[in-house]
Image 1 (cartoon, rainbow, N blue to C red):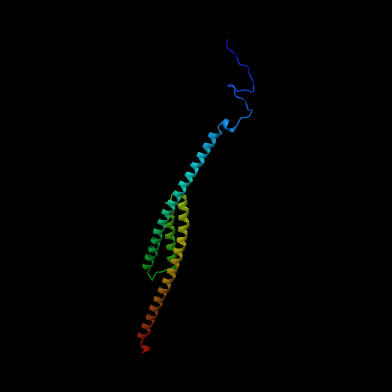
Image 2 (spheres, one colour; image 1 turned 120 degrees about the vertical axis):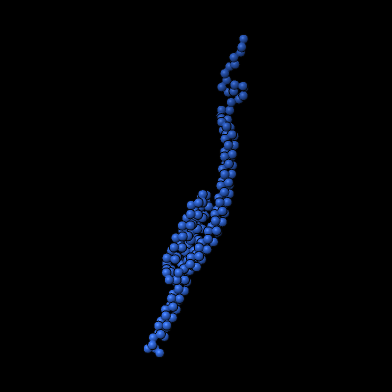
Length: 170
């Protein structure tokens, strides 16, 4: 006849001794710790990947800004070369140039998709705009001095001609 074993609360079904306490390992702690380590490693890898991408995009933005700076300097020189001394207005010269450079820098910033590169470009473009606006104001002041000198010389020459042509002065 089959034998039925007697129940003993101190023994496991296969005969091992009960300790009375379960450990974390009994509930899969080793597997959980391994998954946690895997997750942390993947997080570090993704952060490194993101940093590399940000650096690459920021470097590209720097190259774009260098090209833009050359374009801005060329535009200022072009505007300076095309000044009409008769209609020259130093205030509108600098303001018009500032509007142009602000519009162009906004277009560049809008085309930058990477957040880190966009932040870099925004800061650098603002500094460039401020620098170039100051340069445009200096150029306008210099051109105004020159056009004023030319106007003064022309007026003096015309006054001298009128005086010399007056028969009462002979």
